Amino acid sequence: MMKLISRKPLSLSLAGMIAVGAGGIWLSATSNAADEPAKTASASATAAKVKPALTVTTTKASSGNLVIKLAANGSVAAWQEALIGSEATGLRIQELHANIGDVVQRGQLLVSFASETVKADLALAQASLAEAQANLADAVANAERTRALQTSGALSAQQVGQYLTAEQTAKARVESAKASVEAQQLRMRHTRVLAPDSGIISARAATLGSVVGNGAELFRMIRQGRLEWRAEVTASEMAKIMPGIEAIVTAPGGTQWKGKVRVVSPTVDAQTRMGLVYVDLVPDTTITTTASGTKPQAATASLAFKPGMYAKGEFMMGSSQALTIPQQAVVVRDGFSYAFRLNADGRVTQIKVQTGRRVSSAQGDLVEVVSGLNADSTIVSSGAGFLNDGDTVKVVTATKPANAAASAATVAAAKN
Image 1 (cartoon, rainbow, N blue to C red):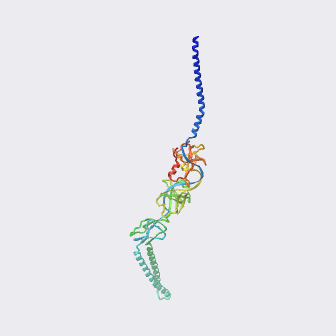
Image 2 (image 1 turned 180 degrees about the vertical axis):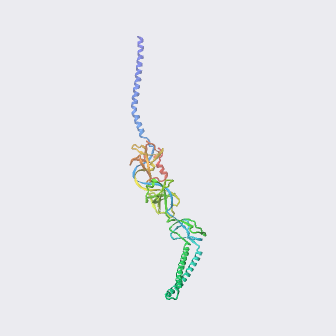
């Protein structure tokens, strides 16, 4: 009896402990289940408060007419180069009236030769002419008397023939003397070398005091000051270019000039497989770029182009519809072009695009998008180079910075 009584309190103690342990486990599970919604709400709030990776500006892809251009390179040369030579033989250059770079007019005096010898020869020819004319007058008088007495028999037939022949001989000598005078007058004119056309003196071989021979080169002249751009294009491009097409040629100094295709070469070089397109450079129209765009203005006296220069240019081949975006919105990575499209949740999506032509406008440089984007797609225009696919961005309104530093700060803002 005593043994049973002693075990009962121990059993009751164990049961109590088990009950207390089970109650603790139930309370812990209930507490964890109650905290789970609070943790989920906290995670959602944290996700909602994700800081944007970058502050950017956006724009829309727009569709419009884009000029079709064909780029080419080539040399600048004179439209026609005139060689001015000497027709005088053995004469000394007495005066030079033109130099390299001078703008001359047609008929302007360029060179004067010493004319003392020619003047003496001209005087001798004129004296011979006067003598021949006197002999002719005497011969004509004798011939007239002979004709009057021819039927009377006072003169023989032989005498009549002599007088009439003398008249014809005297006439011939007068004509010969006149030709000699004209030849000497021509030599006198050749002592003055005149410009055959208006233009610019490009080279001078004449030296003061030198004695030149017949045909010796004295000057070279760019006729009418006209220059041309000889563009080198492939055979396939030559088929697209027609006379009259406008071209914009850029000088090495950056000045742009208008030109017009005059003729397309009928042949292609067998070695290079390239052909020439001859473009007349309009001498009175240059193009300047201002804040409001490009516009022509009157050219200065010093031409931007010189013969022998190598220049680049573009042929204006018309226009076509194209989808364009700002050039700064295109990011090149691993050899491919990408743009970042802005989604409704504030995140960006990296899209691979295929680019085409590039054009400058008053709003900046634009790039044609051949594929990858739709019209009116909202894309990141500034700061795209610092983004990755899926980044959250903050969009601000684009402003015109006062200087380049402010512009760089707007384009690429620091991460928050």
